[in-house]
Amino acid sequence: MTETLNITTTQIAESRLTGTDFSNLPFGKVFSDHMFIAEYENGEWTNLQVLPFGPIMMSPAISALHYGQAIFEGMKAYRQADGKISVFRGDKNFERFNKSAVRMAMPTIPQDIFKAGIAALIEIDEKWVPNQDGYSLYLRPVMFATDPYLGVKASDKYTFAILTTPTGPYYSKPLKVKIETEFTRADEGGVGFAKTAGNYARSIFPFAEAAKEGFDQLIWTDASTHEYIEEAGTANLIFVIDGKLVTPSVRSTVLDGVTRDTIIHLAKAAGIEVEERRISIKEVIEGIENGRLTDAFAAGTAATVTPIGQISYEGKLYTLTDPATRTVSQGIAKTLNDIRYGLVPDENGWNWVL
Ligand code: COI
Image (tube, rainbow, N blue to C red; front, top):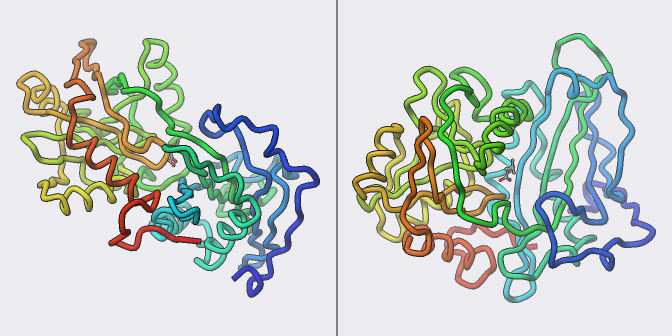
């Protein structure tokens, strides 16, 4: 594949692998030796390259910096039990990347370039795929507008890059979250369903305020009434109420999470009833109080399956069931990991084995 697409490779002079402590891999801080870059100009993707990870030259006038035409994805490559490396549900991430591109008036990326970039990077940086349980090589495809032009319009030029970073889970303990009812992450008709930079930018201030009060994350609510739960910004949200798996339906304000979708499939296959619908804050709080809500977790590529331990609403802190007793999320998380690490058959064809 790499030959047909003509990817130019420049090897790093000296690998940083031996100086990397694989027992200390905070999310997104340690990058592998190489990155993949492609450029879009005159209506086509050109100049496909694998090159040492590092700074790239950019004009300070590029429109991504001023107007936010920037999208990304989050995917993971796992070292399987037999030593092979596989990328989990890459096809779904690829589809979502292009959905985000269309919404942000950016060019789509052809699947062969997306896949060949990942394959070439993993081939050259194979040793960067961790082999500890719960660890993986996080892949971050990103595209941004590079016209050095201050007029507000779709850029004519773009850069597509793939960065890779060996990592463990984004969260290391059950989450203490706050239901956010003042600020909003996304509004109808906006870009909430797209994985675009601005959605994350607008969440940073409210999250920083909540972090000062000791919260690990926010639960975003709908923009018009603040009565319905949407997502967590870094992950989707899933609850178990009356034994059913209940999750906010995907809409223009909620990201169509790949882990969320995978969990829905696995739950149905395990005979658990699944409801994708609107969930009110009232239902969640009452469920905690009357014991009908028995499990709650964040689900995402980076977050994996992270239990929610406590939820704050209007200044009152509610403690959920002990995460150690939560059989539904633990069972699903185990099945999910077993598939990703090749410990059980991949019946749905989710692993792209390289
Ligand atoms: C991912 O789960 O891959 C994400 O993109 C979330 C990220 C903002 C940490």
